[in-house]
Length: 205
Image (cartoon, rainbow, N blue to C red):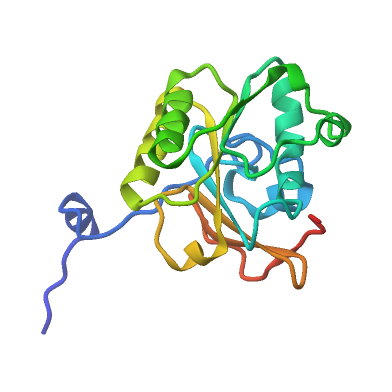
């Protein structure tokens, strides 16, 4: 007959993983500006002071529309937004139409390790509202450094990466996949809860 072990003893010995409770879904995170997405994410939005990954088939297919409400809210309130190595120069009229204050927008062009270093420094500084990076090559160690830097600087961190990276593990607090056919958004990882079972329809083109 097997012996009975108290649950408290297992937890104290770190033999059982205990999930964290999201105590305030409506205000724990930073609203994405998309009601359907806020409703699907634990905490009701982007995880604060953390790294979020957005995985796409190719850059320049309209994926920025997912972040424009957030960037508009930040820049209008005087927060700095930094773009690290965007694949295309931002089209000013589109950003203005989305409500982004271009006076609060900075662009840093760098390659490889320099781009990762720039992103880490901007996040760690605490002087930015959000940092967006287009990472062509980033290993687990690099992503962990960005995650730690975002927590240190209390900054929203977003990393655009190839969709093929969805098959690899990541320390990011949130991972989203944008599909073009059909146009939909899949949450494959979210801190504080389970990802939605079904894709979310989103016309992000």
